[in-house]
Length: 170
Image (cartoon, helix red, strand yellow):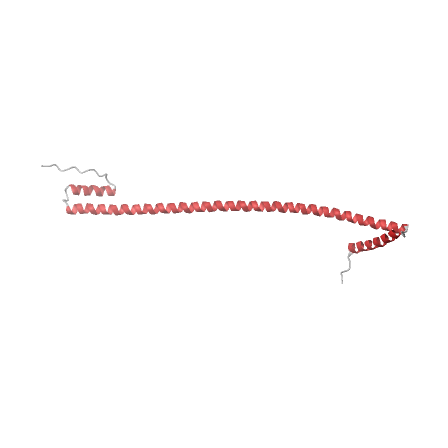
């Protein structure tokens, strides 16, 4: 069982029922002047309501068009924001990769410098050992000892080595 019609729906149903009866009477030619006036009144009311409905529907259609346009604009803006965010993300990723690459290069250069320093220290240690050997195995006052002394001074940075003066020949 259906619900009872409310307000405007009940009025519309009543008008349509009356219009149907009056139209049937008009078709048979049995319409009195009062009934003709009532028919005209109901037809005019239906026309007025139809006009109101069309106006309301036009307003609704315009509102829907505005909302659709606003939604389309919001979608375009959101897509643009997403593209900018993605572009920014790619830039940040590239920057981070560059930073990582730079950090790796700095660490590689540091490691290479460390290896060179260690090699230099090992070389200096060998030169010092050779200088000590030269003093031990050669005359402590001869040319070898002079070379050993100059090498040690050069290692410590106190003098620049020069060639020793050869001893005069008898």
